Image 1 (cartoon, rainbow, N blue to C red):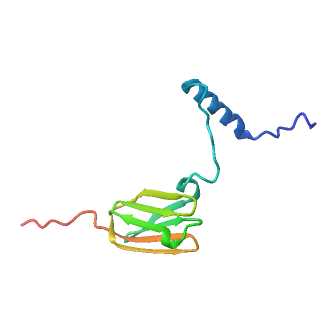
Image 2: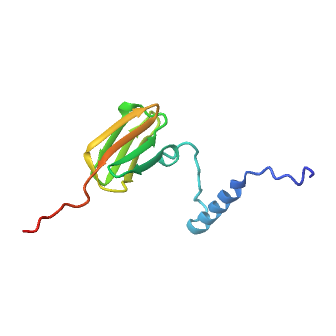
Length: 131
């Protein structure tokens, strides 16, 4: 394999070049596509997982570079909202929970950049006595 056979190009350059060309075709030549690394917010920096068992719902979020005092957590029983801020950016993530939870039962801990929130499952329906 000679030097002409090597392909040292970034494989994504062609994709971004084509996206830019398509945007220019649609919008005019003065539109450019700019990609900035490491500044995309929660989507790229934070990983959130949920698990559930018969009694509880567990949410674990990786919040790199966030201080405990900068985290705000809210829940309405179906959606968990995690907001946080660093010196460089603000984050907000809304997570639809897999089942209805008792938001007043929440227990949250934050250690080493890992947020853990545990909820008790809410009864999905009430028993109705027939008289």
